[in-house]
Image (cartoon, rainbow, N blue to C red; front, side, top):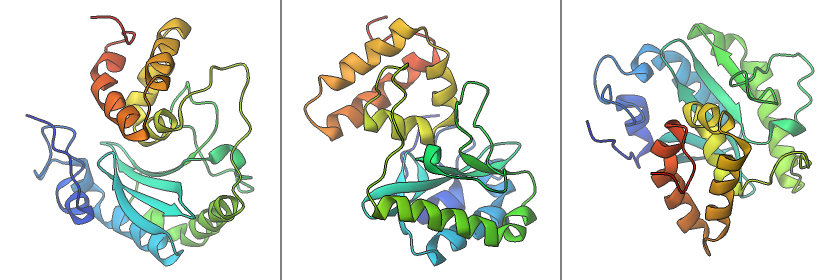
Length: 210
Protein backbone atom coordinates (compact mmCIF):
# COMPACT_ATOMS: atom_id res chain seq x y z
CA UNK A 1 0.00 0.00 0.00
CA UNK A 2 1.26 3.48 -0.85
CA UNK A 3 2.07 5.63 2.15
CA UNK A 4 -0.51 8.29 2.88
CA UNK A 5 0.69 11.69 4.04
CA UNK A 6 -2.00 12.97 6.38
CA UNK A 7 -2.41 16.72 6.74
CA UNK A 8 -5.52 16.92 8.94
CA UNK A 9 -5.14 16.30 12.66
CA UNK A 10 -8.45 14.48 12.96
CA UNK A 11 -7.29 11.91 10.40
CA UNK A 12 -4.59 10.71 12.79
CA UNK A 13 -7.05 9.98 15.58
CA UNK A 14 -9.62 8.47 13.22
CA UNK A 15 -7.40 6.62 10.73
CA UNK A 16 -3.76 6.60 11.84
CA UNK A 17 -0.47 8.10 10.66
CA UNK A 18 -0.59 6.69 7.11
CA UNK A 19 2.81 4.99 7.20
CA UNK A 20 1.70 1.39 6.81
CA UNK A 21 -0.99 -0.80 5.27
CA UNK A 22 -2.99 -0.75 8.51
CA UNK A 23 -3.95 2.89 7.86
CA UNK A 24 -7.70 3.47 8.14
CA UNK A 25 -8.35 -0.11 9.26
CA UNK A 26 -9.49 -1.53 12.58
CA UNK A 27 -5.98 -2.97 13.00
CA UNK A 28 -4.25 0.44 13.09
CA UNK A 29 -2.27 1.06 16.28
CA UNK A 30 -4.12 4.32 16.88
CA UNK A 31 -7.39 2.39 17.19
CA UNK A 32 -5.96 0.24 19.97
CA UNK A 33 -4.93 3.26 22.04
CA UNK A 34 -7.71 5.72 21.14
CA UNK A 35 -8.67 6.69 24.69
CA UNK A 36 -5.07 7.28 25.76
CA UNK A 37 -4.17 9.24 22.64
CA UNK A 38 -7.21 11.47 23.04
CA UNK A 39 -6.25 12.13 26.65
CA UNK A 40 -2.70 13.11 25.65
CA UNK A 41 -4.15 15.44 23.04
CA UNK A 42 -6.39 17.05 25.66
CA UNK A 43 -3.49 17.60 28.04
CA UNK A 44 -1.32 19.17 25.35
CA UNK A 45 -4.04 21.51 24.21
CA UNK A 46 -5.04 22.50 27.74
CA UNK A 47 -1.38 23.28 28.50
CA UNK A 48 -1.62 25.96 25.81
CA UNK A 49 0.31 24.22 23.06
CA UNK A 50 -0.41 24.79 19.39
CA UNK A 51 -1.44 21.64 17.53
CA UNK A 52 -0.05 20.72 14.11
CA UNK A 53 0.52 17.65 11.93
CA UNK A 54 4.18 16.79 11.33
CA UNK A 55 5.58 13.52 9.99
CA UNK A 56 2.03 12.15 10.04
CA UNK A 57 1.66 12.67 13.80
CA UNK A 58 0.12 15.23 16.15
CA UNK A 59 2.92 17.65 17.03
CA UNK A 60 2.59 20.30 19.74
CA UNK A 61 4.43 23.61 19.52
CA UNK A 62 5.12 26.71 21.61
CA UNK A 63 7.06 29.90 20.97
CA UNK A 64 7.93 28.67 17.49
CA UNK A 65 9.48 25.43 18.78
CA UNK A 66 8.45 21.79 18.60
CA UNK A 67 7.70 20.69 22.16
CA UNK A 68 6.27 17.18 21.99
CA UNK A 69 4.79 14.66 19.58
CA UNK A 70 2.27 11.85 20.02
CA UNK A 71 2.83 8.38 18.59
CA UNK A 72 1.34 4.89 18.74
CA UNK A 73 2.95 1.50 18.18
CA UNK A 74 1.56 -2.00 18.48
CA UNK A 75 2.64 -2.46 22.10
CA UNK A 76 2.49 1.07 23.46
CA UNK A 77 1.70 4.71 22.82
CA UNK A 78 3.89 7.64 23.78
CA UNK A 79 4.44 11.34 24.22
CA UNK A 80 7.98 12.30 23.15
CA UNK A 81 9.83 15.56 23.86
CA UNK A 82 12.05 17.19 21.24
CA UNK A 83 14.60 18.83 23.56
CA UNK A 84 14.54 16.25 26.33
CA UNK A 85 18.19 16.87 27.27
CA UNK A 86 16.97 20.03 29.01
CA UNK A 87 14.38 18.20 31.09
CA UNK A 88 15.09 17.56 34.77
CA UNK A 89 12.74 14.54 35.05
CA UNK A 90 12.55 14.69 38.89
CA UNK A 91 10.25 11.67 39.01
CA UNK A 92 12.41 9.55 36.72
CA UNK A 93 9.47 8.71 34.48
CA UNK A 94 10.95 9.48 31.06
CA UNK A 95 12.19 6.51 29.02
CA UNK A 96 14.58 6.13 26.10
CA UNK A 97 13.14 5.49 22.64
CA UNK A 98 15.53 2.58 22.18
CA UNK A 99 18.93 1.15 23.20
CA UNK A 100 20.80 3.61 20.96
CA UNK A 101 18.99 6.68 22.29
CA UNK A 102 21.24 8.65 24.65
CA UNK A 103 18.63 10.77 26.45
CA UNK A 104 15.37 9.57 28.06
CA UNK A 105 12.80 11.58 26.12
CA UNK A 106 9.34 10.05 26.31
CA UNK A 107 6.40 9.02 28.42
CA UNK A 108 5.56 5.47 27.37
CA UNK A 109 2.18 3.94 28.14
CA UNK A 110 1.00 0.33 27.89
CA UNK A 111 -2.53 1.00 29.14
CA UNK A 112 -4.80 3.79 27.91
CA UNK A 113 -5.77 4.64 31.49
CA UNK A 114 -2.17 5.54 32.35
CA UNK A 115 -2.33 8.86 30.51
CA UNK A 116 -5.17 10.17 32.68
CA UNK A 117 -3.56 8.78 35.82
CA UNK A 118 -0.37 10.73 35.09
CA UNK A 119 -2.13 13.90 33.91
CA UNK A 120 -0.62 16.16 36.59
CA UNK A 121 2.93 14.95 35.91
CA UNK A 122 2.52 15.17 32.12
CA UNK A 123 1.22 18.74 32.38
CA UNK A 124 4.13 19.74 34.62
CA UNK A 125 6.66 18.34 32.14
CA UNK A 126 4.94 20.09 29.23
CA UNK A 127 5.04 23.40 31.12
CA UNK A 128 8.75 22.88 31.84
CA UNK A 129 9.47 22.29 28.15
CA UNK A 130 7.38 25.33 27.18
CA UNK A 131 9.47 27.46 29.55
CA UNK A 132 12.66 26.42 27.79
CA UNK A 133 11.12 27.30 24.43
CA UNK A 134 10.09 30.74 25.69
CA UNK A 135 13.64 31.33 26.93
CA UNK A 136 15.10 30.21 23.59
CA UNK A 137 17.10 27.41 25.23
CA UNK A 138 18.40 24.42 23.32
CA UNK A 139 20.30 21.37 24.65
CA UNK A 140 24.10 21.68 24.67
CA UNK A 141 25.70 19.99 21.69
CA UNK A 142 27.56 16.73 22.18
CA UNK A 143 30.86 17.49 20.44
CA UNK A 144 31.74 13.80 20.32
CA UNK A 145 29.06 13.42 17.66
CA UNK A 146 28.72 15.07 14.28
CA UNK A 147 26.24 17.96 14.34
CA UNK A 148 22.92 16.96 12.78
CA UNK A 149 20.72 19.47 10.93
CA UNK A 150 17.69 20.57 12.94
CA UNK A 151 15.33 19.03 10.40
CA UNK A 152 17.01 15.64 10.80
CA UNK A 153 16.93 15.92 14.60
CA UNK A 154 13.22 16.66 14.45
CA UNK A 155 12.59 13.75 12.07
CA UNK A 156 14.51 11.33 14.30
CA UNK A 157 12.64 12.53 17.35
CA UNK A 158 9.33 11.94 15.62
CA UNK A 159 10.09 8.56 14.04
CA UNK A 160 11.31 5.76 16.32
CA UNK A 161 12.02 3.37 13.46
CA UNK A 162 14.06 5.97 11.59
CA UNK A 163 15.98 7.00 14.73
CA UNK A 164 16.98 3.43 15.56
CA UNK A 165 18.09 2.75 11.98
CA UNK A 166 20.04 6.01 11.73
CA UNK A 167 21.94 5.47 14.97
CA UNK A 168 22.87 1.94 13.88
CA UNK A 169 24.57 3.28 10.74
CA UNK A 170 28.35 3.51 10.67
CA UNK A 171 29.77 6.98 11.43
CA UNK A 172 30.68 7.38 7.77
CA UNK A 173 27.16 6.63 6.58
CA UNK A 174 25.66 9.03 9.12
CA UNK A 175 28.10 11.70 7.95
CA UNK A 176 27.06 11.14 4.32
CA UNK A 177 23.51 12.20 5.18
CA UNK A 178 24.66 15.22 7.15
CA UNK A 179 26.83 16.39 4.24
CA UNK A 180 23.99 15.91 1.77
CA UNK A 181 21.43 17.68 3.91
CA UNK A 182 23.79 20.51 4.79
CA UNK A 183 24.21 21.30 1.10
CA UNK A 184 20.51 22.12 0.78
CA UNK A 185 19.74 25.84 0.75
CA UNK A 186 16.32 25.69 2.41
CA UNK A 187 14.68 23.87 5.29
CA UNK A 188 11.94 22.62 2.95
CA UNK A 189 14.54 20.96 0.73
CA UNK A 190 16.19 19.28 3.72
CA UNK A 191 12.83 17.94 4.91
CA UNK A 192 12.07 16.61 1.43
CA UNK A 193 15.46 14.89 1.25
CA UNK A 194 14.93 13.25 4.64
CA UNK A 195 11.65 11.80 3.41
CA UNK A 196 13.40 10.54 0.27
CA UNK A 197 16.30 9.08 2.27
CA UNK A 198 14.12 7.22 4.80
CA UNK A 199 14.06 3.89 2.89
CA UNK A 200 17.86 4.00 2.46
CA UNK A 201 18.42 4.65 6.14
CA UNK A 202 16.09 1.81 7.09
CA UNK A 203 18.06 -0.43 4.72
CA UNK A 204 21.33 0.48 6.46
CA UNK A 205 22.75 2.37 3.48
CA UNK A 206 24.57 5.66 3.15
CA UNK A 207 23.28 8.63 1.18
CA UNK A 208 25.35 7.79 -1.90
CA UNK A 209 24.74 4.05 -1.94
CA UNK A 210 22.35 2.40 -4.35
